[in-house]
Length: 392
View 1 (cartoon, rainbow, N blue to C red):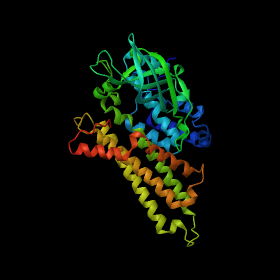
View 2: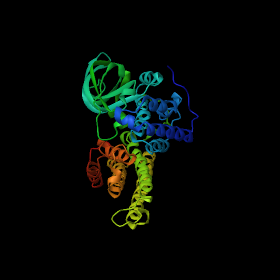
View 3: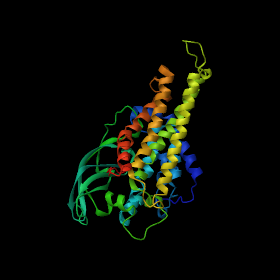
View 4: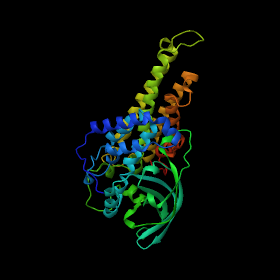
């Protein structure tokens, strides 16, 4: 099917759509936790609001939203449910991947209209077959795969035009892969990040994304391309990871709201003092609120560094993006933990709003692109003039 044009959709409309997604996902949160996936209702709403297409190039009728708008949309959904925010981030992000394919592949995937999942880890094998590749392998952590029509899988392969093996992302039809439902985790259960197995599946060359070329050039293969498209002017991986801190911020914002509600009427048996009148909780809410301001300020800086990357002469080291992003997530994780420890046992009941948000925020912090210790080590190398080797 051909896609519908939605080029006149506004940021306000996208944010209204994000709120609808979030509210529905919150209503279904316990069911999603039990089923280890959000429902088709939530996914359909991501499509119906056009959010799944918001980061497509304008030539395909999308709104071609800015990175700032993208982050706002993700954060809005995260105010209600982090698993839904994860997919509200990844579906439009992954649907932008064809932007780096040759036009024939781009047209095929985008005009089909389905959602794309992916896994970058180069764990598969790729054997040349004519102009294409035959792909085999097994990959875990493929978020949203149950509702996707396409999936990109990481492989390392020697392409005819390259002088050494490179990491690529062949994009396969989901109907060609086996899905193993093995997603049973502490948090982010609704993301449905299951395993896939691929056995000797052919992928034509027009659906093979050279990730290293996309990273180094930031451009599509052809010379005549849409110069207004945001992703063509920003470092590939730091832009690709923009949603993770936005999810954490949206979740931390909700944690503070819940902390305030649970604290205002709470009276501790040990001294009979109403917690809202106690310097203990007053200090905590002040500090975690200030930490949220700091996280939001860093997020604004992150987006600014992305948007001005080329104007600034491409001087921002990738380790700096990594460090800023993980610092945001660390601040949000600290907010969640501080709220839990201050509330005590009231925060521990399974399925409670605060309990679900806390474990989901902690789970965001475990993603390989969110690891704080890795990021500061890399950024420190950059600052002293050493090559950190990180992707951002």
